[in-house]
Image (cartoon, rainbow, N blue to C red; front, side):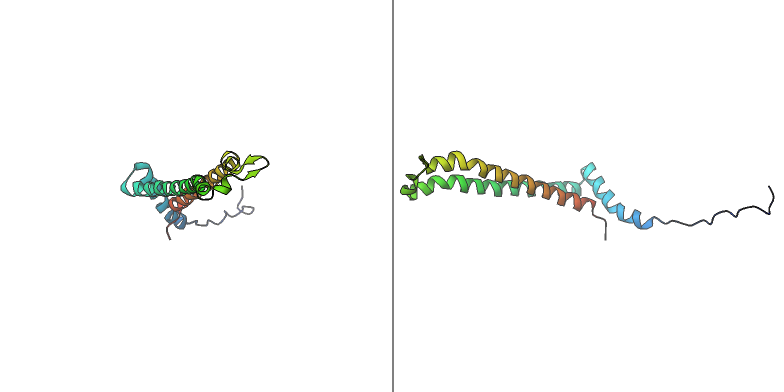
Length: 130
């Protein structure tokens, strides 16, 4: 092994991960606060629960007005209550048939909006410090 054919060792380069470490510290700290159930973590979870509750109450109000308002509508406009469509009274069609697609639509909207709330919460927890 002579010195005439020796290959010089590769140059070393220094890789600094300080930027990445600094960004992860806030997210890690927030996740730790959630896991340890500190006051900050409890406040974050309470905010998520409040957002989900507010969403549920708003959509419950939509259902209550949408379905609960039909009897009021038929009481105010009795001729509308006596209307028939295809041999079936309109109140029966609205309450017995049309209410199901309405409830499915409200349920779909609830799931979509609740998932968005949860994604916003996850983004807040994992957001790097700026």
